[in-house]
Image (cartoon, rainbow, N blue to C red; front, side, top):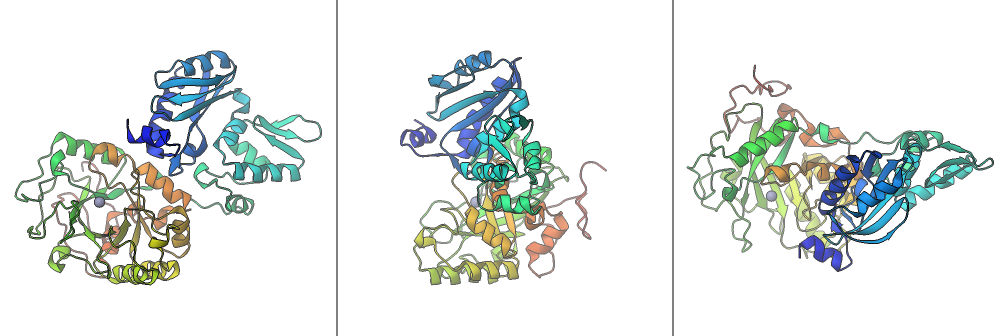
Length: 468
Ligand SMILES: [Zn+2]
């Protein structure tokens, strides 16, 4: 039984990434049917919540019968509990509940809006509709008096009829987004197309992505996996990647790739490819007092330093606050990462003074990391919103060690969107020259750690992409 199956079996939710694979598979099958005009996933998955308890699929068709039949016969469906002429409910082979709703194409927008939810958001829309003399239902927006359908084609049409700007699914929560839409102040959100690089990428000796930390003489060998990674980065229009070693001085936990006595020296460029600028990074355990458990000489060899909080999580709020503030004030720390839970979570042992920590991060040029992959979340959405309001910058990363993991960036971007973060507040949307100035934290920008024959590091411009 996989972790996802166990999670479902115990009645909890599964991480969005697990459910997304099943949802995309179902949508791809439906889209190939001649009867289907369009199909997509909805629900918490479309809102890109951290975890979901079911998969919602919406399809548009003038002939729903064959669509429902095809859905019930899909290989990924293990069981169907209930079906009628336009819907079916069952569970996947992974044990995840799944629901299909087939609507008429002209009612697509209303159906998608309803099934995307959440109920709090839809309820607020219904109240606005009533106020305007409409009735908003699953199958359309209707005139309350004549009961004639006013609109249902697209979500955009319905929002507009209600006097609202379009609200992206990741913002829909019933927590202020409708008020923002009423006042035409829905923020411009960071998008995957804005991302220019990944600043947290682990060279994994086992995968041949990078030289073994225990054998730094060994050059990165340009293996297929590394090429795949670069191809994925290039396909995403990335301009830079940070290869990050993990450094732990004396922790008993086995998450170290660079031993304390490893010589800190530059490595050769990983591939003969100047379209991707490679930064050298180090992930260091943040000590209980906020100090970095790493020699300063090693830190000096790095372009980007990520301070990770993985131990001493039961500190008092006062101790955790001063620990985080000291980390921000360290001129070597660029990014703070919290991998064992949500930074700013309601759990008491992770308590700290948010105002003080956000002020320290914003004023010192220290970014908070939002991690894309599975259970390695960074700040909670709520804390992210608070930090954004306080002017804190973010780094959205995957912590990946393979090409597949690198493509998980969309989950991190969605987390940032849910915190209402815009592209300018994300340091890895910036051009390389601006990013390197930020990472230097007031010091002179160092020479490139790797050779980049065609990279233009002068001025505020871009790294040259592609062949001259
Ligand atoms: Zn890491």
